Image 1 (cartoon, rainbow, N blue to C red):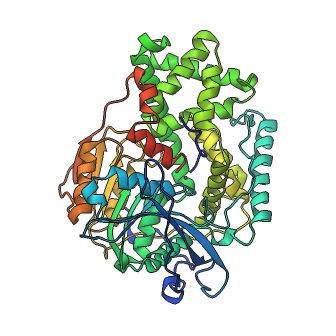
Image 2 (tube, rainbow, N blue to C red):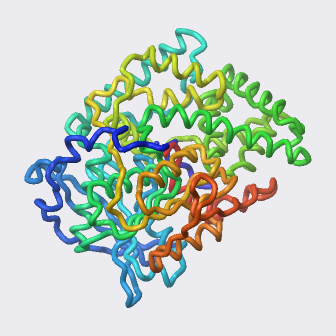
Image 3 (cartoon, rainbow, N blue to C red):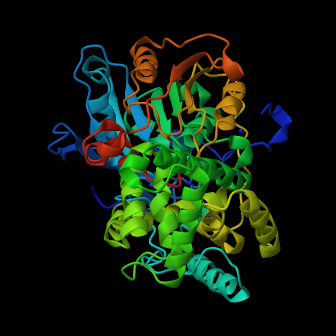
Length: 527
């Protein structure tokens, strides 16, 4: 199992007036109309799994309101079309914010039916500040080095230690990237996408986004509705909760998914020997957390790192056998080795993760207003923690730099849209990172859209992950624009049953080789 990049990353009946109009930056002149990007020069950068992959770059204005000013560079990838029937570029994004999209192009092209993928240039890109785009954000590379303070501020000293840590991160970003931070946000990234469109010579683009990539796609569609040909959004951000409320709602949903893991372990007591009562198993997990807060495993896994290790289980149940094995070894045998190895695979943050977190924070802190009074964070977080303790304080500290961020906030974009061709939306009912209501809300906001629901599914990122029912709808749409039309639960147009949870013996098979695991390795966490 490869070492994970960061704990990444990163809505309703909503009336049109419940969100503000476009932020001033979004209303700026269209940079792609006044700035002419050079045509990308593609070079082979194929891999064993994706031998036809090509790479290039494109320059875009740092400030789209001043297209004649400073330029920055975006890294691109492409799997070119091979069919006579060509349907244009299909831009793909894995979310975050802060996720690299370069490898996703190869995955999407390989996972779609060959005859469908062959009709598109599948285009991946690293958004501004990310990965191979230049300049790349690098605020504080060792920010997640273990062992971090206990996330639950049970004493004033622990709270102050965490506050000092997040303030230092915000300060480091402000000092190192003062020239970039005002321009690292969703609307700037959307305008970059339109420059990419223009550089590719396309009048319209097709777009396929996961997680935060759904918000990116919805905002692009709002600013440039006439330039959208097809729009696929999978695991949908609630645009009415950007971003403080969204994170509070995540806390409840992740707590539910953690309890689902505890129940799954109880069902497989014959393998894990942790008992058959999910509540008692959950109590054992919190006892393990308490012990690790006092004595970290291998000088690497304290309470905060344990939470980071188990967080991926809320995104993808294919990780459950690994997590259960490590949990059982620690409780039943006093063996912390599997736990340390699982942390290194799932929870540890490498250089790409540090970069991704910097972009995640820069985008979320700039996109929308956050409370600047820490007392508000403390009050709200303790209230949620009382009902949902699993990740609530960990998530609060993950985002808390926004309370001290050195740039002013923009206003969220109202993505209400009646000018689009039919969009295709996918949402699992038990998704923790982007709870179900987000799919319902965006379905209401995008006139003519179709919503496909994965019933009882808890994974985040559900198409091209092994569910044939979902993928049939995706394939039909990308083939000729066909969308399902129906009136099911919550206004869903089609419902697919979730795949079964994994079996205890599938941990080794589920990870590096399965399509679901490959996808979730590309999507990362927190986004």
